[in-house]
Structures are given as structure tokens and as C-alpha cells.
Image (tube, rainbow over all chains, first blue to last red; front, side):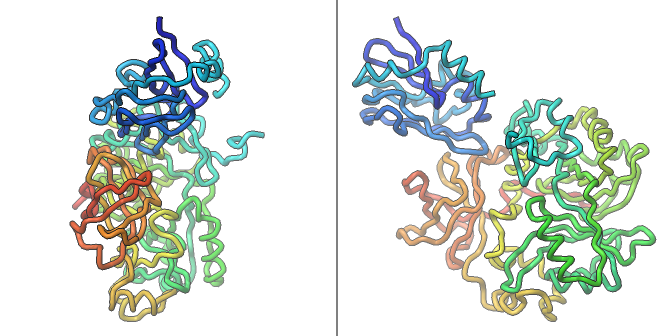
Length: 125
Length: 373
């Protein structure tokens, strides 16, 4: 069964064995506003936990998306560059950024579960 | 005390918050960057109907004295003596190197008793310095700041029909003219001007009546409140300069592609700060020019992005850049060496350490739709 974890930088990671899908959270898309440009990593790119993995831009500003864990990209979401607004409408579903194979499952222990992330967001207000 | 508690507020602060405005610090004020509609839809709404902007943070004042137009001409390159009663002129305060201290709107009021007065509207972030500069340079003139006057902007193709419901004469005012009028029972000064490229008005209102006027305008079906985010994307598409980004004390009006602000008589006579440098640049060309820049892909290029030619030679940098909702793509402007300023010239932008193709583009990106009487 898959499980979802969250970072303090508002990425989510859905874990299925040693494979994971990564995106930005509902909270993050709300803070960014209208998303007009997305750049996703290419297959084969090696990512480090906390390293830059993708780019998301709203009308006003550009933001980095950091990888929640180390590993290798299996695929970037090819539909996003032509439909960046999907990140606003379905950030934790069709608006996923990339899928990756994890190299160190122990890194996931440092991430928040959903309850902890909700509490974290509530404290930011 | 938190950062926001130290910020100044405009007379519409409570209204912004009740409308769900996302408040951010800007030029020392708490200002709405967007409302629940969001920057993209706020932008498109303004181009399609009418948007209401709170620009009360800007500086307003009256400058009065004998030969006040001649006096102000010692600080700006515009033809102020030729400004007719009831008309507005966009101009710039210059330093002795010909650099721009601020850009501003100068109005010669038409009403009796104001023959020796000019009405000034300057940028929020510059207002204290501007008014101190003017007072120091023109000690014989009387400068009265209107610190309790608010300023609203109503912009968009339906602005005239909306405002005409309250002030019938508003609809027939010429572009860049000004009148005093009554909005219901509130005395206001109207300017047919703006910062979006659309038809519209700026309305100076006594602070205590501002919320009443704003609520009456927002009650009209065509009008939505618009935040600073869309204000910026609208003016960028319109090719209008943002002080501190596109123009500053290191840029001359010629370099900024604002030579049109230098009046014909002023070109012949000089007599403004930095005149020698500016007239030399007019005669033999400036070393660099502000131009429109159209990135070829989808990626926006933000301010301070390096601009190169196709041979890795640095030409300048982007000074304003982002996504243009009406263009539905990235738009930018910035400075390039003058030899590269011709429309269509290929450029290279360095975005996140990658070379991105772009071209010099004609400004504005969105056509101006000012009122023609």
C-alpha cells in the first residue's frame, strides 16, 4: 500500500515500495497562485534529498521544487509543461511533477505524515 | 511587534481584508497583492471590463508659487509651461547626471484660484525623497502634501460607463485631462490616466470618504478589486516603466526610451538637470536602450536575467519580466547595447544557467486602448 509524506518546503511524496511520485501540496499551490510555467526533470536525472528537482512559476514569481528524497528520475510529467494550471486544479493528483526510484528508504523517516503536515501548515498562518 | 504591524495602511485597509485581499508589505504600506480571484483573472478582468485599484500609497501634493511652471522646469525635462489648464503630463525628476530620481504626473488644475498651482502625483517609495528634493530646490514655492488624500484607479474598457453613472462628465473627458467633480456628495479630483494601457481614471478622494466611493464602485457589476500583482503584469504588458526596476538614478530618459518626455522647446533651450548629457545622447545616440524582450519559449525571464547576444557577449539585463496573461506567454523588458535594440534582433537570455532564445520586441505587448475623444 502506498503512503504519502510531506516536506517543510511543501512537496509531497507518494511511496510505493522503492518507487515514488513527487509533487507540490494543495497548500503550496494556494500560496503560489496561478501557475503559468512548469519545468520537470528528465528521466535518468540523479536527485539528492533537498536538491533542486523542478521549477514552478506563478504570474509573479519563480520557485524551485526540491526532491524529498535521493534517487533517479523515472519520468517527468510530460503533460505539465503544456498545462501548468493542472498544478492549481489537482496538485496532489494529475499535477504530479515526477516519478523516481528511491536510493535510500531511510531518508523518508525524516518527513512528515499527513497529520503532522496539516499541523505544520496551520502554524504558518 | 510583527512586521505587518509596523506598516502604514491606506484608508481601505479594512475593506481589502474583508474582500479577502492577501496583504503584503510594499513601499512601507500593507497592500493587497491579490484578492481571491487571483492575479491571472484579475488581470484579464481589467482588460475585459473594469478593475479597481487602491493606489493611496502614492504621494500627492500641490506646488504653488509665481511662475510655478517655469520653476518646475528647472527639475524636469518636460514642457510644463506648455501644459494647458486641466491637462496632465508624465515627466521625470532628474539629477545632475541626467539620471531619473522618479517619474511623476504633473497636472495643471483648471479651476479658478489654482492658476499658480501644479498637482503632483509621485511614486510611493520615492515620495518623501521627492518632496524633500522639490522643497529644497524650489524654496520660493509652497509645497503642500496631501497626506490624507487617497487615490483609487478605475481601469478597463468599461471604466468610463461605470464612472459616468456617478459623474456624467467623466465619460467625455479627454485622455490625460483632469477635472474636479462630486462623486455623490464627495469632492474628488479625476484624472483620465492610469498604469494599465487601458482607458480609465485615477481618482483623488478625501481619506474619510474613500471607502464609501470604493464600495459604490465595487457594487457595479463590471468592477472587481485588483491587487498589486495584476497591476504589475498589466503595466508590463503595456510597456510602462516601474521606477526602481526599469528606471532609476543610473538611467537617463533617453536610455529608458522615454525621449518623448523631453519637450521640443526644452531640447532647444536645455535648462534641466543633466541637460548636456541628455542632449548629447539625443544627438548621437545613447550607449544602451530599454527595449521589449520576447522570450521564445514558455519560461518567464525575471528581472536581473542576463541578456547576451548570440556570441556570449553580455548586452545588459532584464529589468522587468514575467508572464503576460493577455499575451498568454512570457514578456519582458530590459536594457541592451544600442546596436542590438532593433526590433527582431536575436538575443540570448540566461535563465537558471541555461541559454534561452529571445528577440527584441515592439512595445507595448498589449496595445494601448486609451480614450480618444
